[in-house]
Length: 110
Length: 116
Image (cartoon, rainbow over all chains, first blue to last red; front, side, top):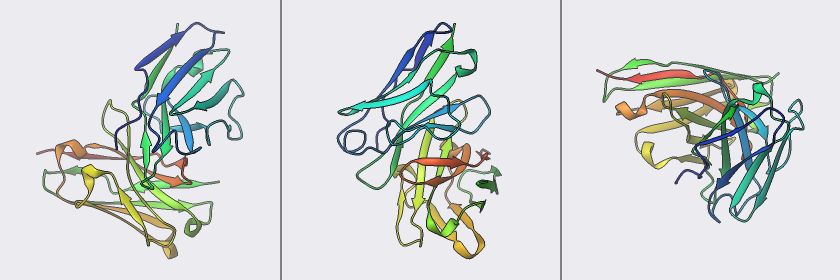
């Protein structure tokens, strides 16, 4: 039940694109298409941004996109905006019928 | 509108017990797996436990096995987390969440503080 590995921080200027990686194993990220991404602002509950690797819930900007290759999933934020500054977490379903979250990435808009 | 409202958090001494509740509305509660997720102060998210629609399957993160028990009452649209033998490292905001192999809805959380 080890946490998925994410970079601690990623930064970019307004308008740029950034990508956050999320590395797991064949028992979680690599084994299922149940990878999701969450945005969390300070003091707030997480918000679902991407589910099932690359799907966006209704109301989430199309500037957010997800993908997966092998045991690594990625979240790309294009056209970076000040409001995107937040913590981001990935999550995956696992072979043990549990869920596991990533270590979290702090996104800074320069 | 899906709503999940947690209650029952508070200050408890090490070794003590606490029962968290979650009131669900806006969806057919009995049709969904449910989870508890926690977040220690200044730390990341940690999945804690989940429970199948009829309560017949339950899974836990290793660090709470034997101490925490997840349960549900579909007639009351409610989810529970019984926490025993609490430790300082259990201090966190506990979120109730709808689980579709992805957490698609979250409550606002309830703070549990374990301290003497």
